[in-house]
Figure 1: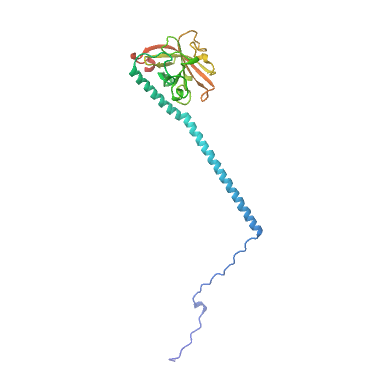
Figure 2: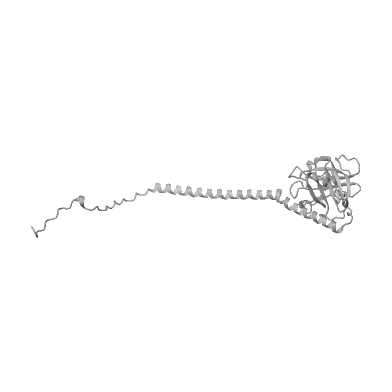
Length: 275
């Protein structure tokens, strides 16, 4: 009937809205006891010791790498850069020498008139493609390390000049590093030419013999009639001396030759330099 309120049906659980139910709080797991803490401390100590070892190993590795790089740079300096510098110095000395010849003219000076390190000639070895200025003396710093060939010109080792009517024109040069002008003199064979140019003339020598190894104290190899050369009497000779074996200065290698031609510079280069 109208006006009478009907009671609502009871709510069905299936029709009720879903409610979010919070997950139960799980208590933290209990930490280990004293024994576990000691184990953790030992593990941390071992980790610290390992870290120190790693640091030391890295430092040693860096030191060895640095030393290796320094050694490689030194080898490169000795074997390559000293040649670059010495060849530049020798080339400049040869140009200066030619300019002085053109400017001053005149004849060659007497033996002993040159100061140590002063250039006075140029040596050519066509077979070895060698061209190097010759300076007075055989000093390492003033002459040889500058890529030049040194002349035994003073004291008990004094030798002749190319323009002397007889005697032995004795020279020294590096075989390795600093220009190494005599690097391959061991390749010379009898008949190969060695030419010396001075202010007034070209002097051509012909290689005759070689001594592969002798003591540095054997000064007889640069005497006027050099011992061991096969020459039996006075003449006009040339002697090339250099260190051997390569990269050492234990012994000396000797190359000898005899003069076969003298040509004034105004007549042009000798055949050995034209071919």
